[in-house]
Image 1 (cartoon, rainbow, N blue to C red):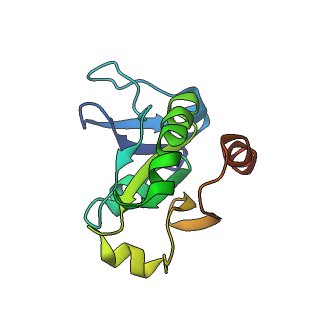
Image 2: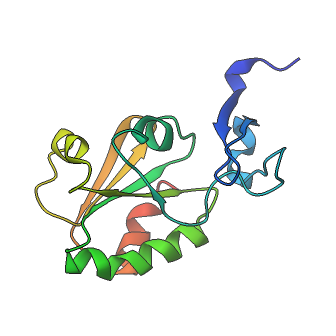
Length: 147
């Protein structure tokens, strides 16, 4: 029988059912045992103050969180880039979008003073910050070491 230390439990992005995943197979973008879809999303997901722990801190793969607001022009400029990266790196990197106007607690916690602000997390640890709207090539170069 396998030891629980070499597995993680994480809910499916499609159906929400919790799946046990062997850590060494995380990079294979595993499928859900219930709905047979990929467990990790291939599109940006909405992150809120309430869902932060589940969506970011408990995620077994790196998470890029985009701190944004609907009125922000540069935020709208990088949204399609983030959508592409979410699709291209599905299963290796999760993209989350956090509206700073609707979630001021997290914006304050991470001292977001200008947007867009992109932060990369591994579990609860902040491992990189990218300020402003950057070109896709520059963003991919920064993300290469994480996913």
